[in-house]
Image (tube, rainbow, N blue to C red; front, side, top):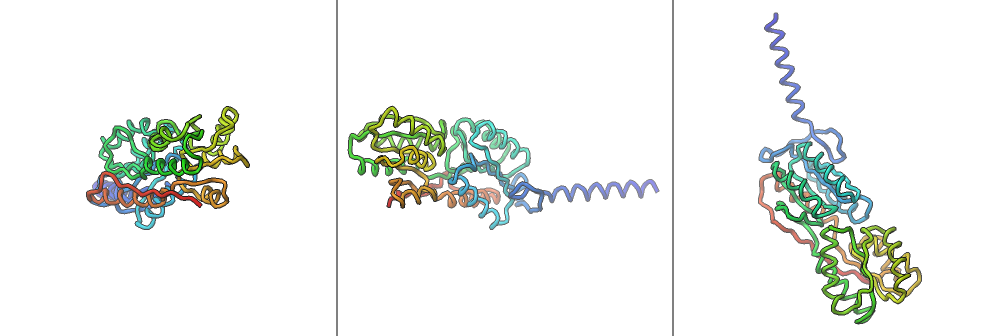
Length: 308
């Protein structure tokens, strides 16, 4: 009798372990079922740490990734850092603890995120950076637009509208973000030679901050002729601050609101990046890594200047 009871307990334990092995995290973070690739380490799930979902560009980026994950039947956990570098580190720590196979990361700060991403790499997790790079970490693949080239094109167009030597302002993105650094570089490649940069200040990629910062800049520099904003949210904030003033505003990202503003003549131009394509490409790359396939170290996504 005791032997039969012992055998029954052992069988129950084996069944419990087998059932536990079938548990996985779905796209919305709830429990579900999945079958991970035999060649991949971890659970077979993808973790996606996005810088913020309070910005239309990154919402579209996330939606593109989620749509591709659902299409391919791959489990993905999306976490929103809320533009907080410390929260992003905590989010990624949680993703690592959940035994993901691939981390897709869209950094808030390209330097601040590096230590935790290096931890993921050290634990055998594959890493794909998207839109922004991770400084100092050898990730498996970096997917991004050519931000330098896009900003250069936008600034050349700005010069064509305001004329050489005109006073302009620069609204900068989040300090430390690679997009901020690269778009600033592209802007200054042209502006330092052909324009007078009368003011530049961070507005953290935020529409409300863009409006406040632009109001302050206009008080100190009422003769500003043009504005280059590192993203459309700040550009739209600048437009609100300017009101009916005759100041040329150029943005970056080609969000729906920016395209509507260009059509209405309130903004002059923006740079299209195709965030949905970036998100989908990131998931496709993650799946290839899970399957043990070789991927390109860098995948560029073309940019395009959008005007009326």
